[in-house]
Image 1 (cartoon, rainbow, N blue to C red):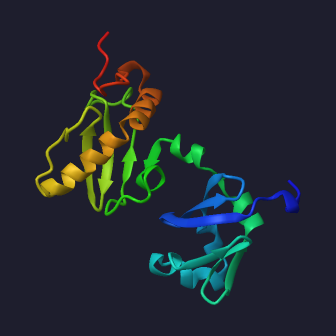
Image 2 (cartoon, rainbow, N blue to C red):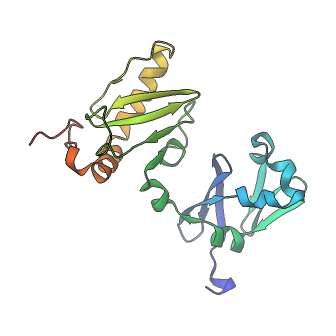
Length: 190
């Protein structure tokens, strides 16, 4: 792609870790992982998330500090990948699916259970702070976790249910012999 054909930056938001969600003026939402940029000593002071989250941008670049670390829109575009690839991976990010929902900044993970023992009901692994919870795709916590307040459990379950279709599609992709019903989230019985 020629330089003058590379779309300009329209919006940038923090996603997680050193990932940014970048919207370009051609309508594309792309994810850029800035981790490799910290191999340059001058950028190391921005590696802590408290500093990394304090970026500025314009249509041509993203920068940190007093413009002592600047990354052009062409580099951002070339380093990034479409959000659809991110969402369709085994990790469904709260930040991607609903990046305005607070205070949850965790993950939903869908694993293949075909070669594992354990829970055969369609479920999602949700990481919240330092806790790992298992939610049934039809609703509710599969394994009780008494150290997590009930209002937090309700919030996380509500989020899983709000995004149930995406989670069911992902479950079915990774667990074809334990398929979930697309309407209810219950395991299909054969």
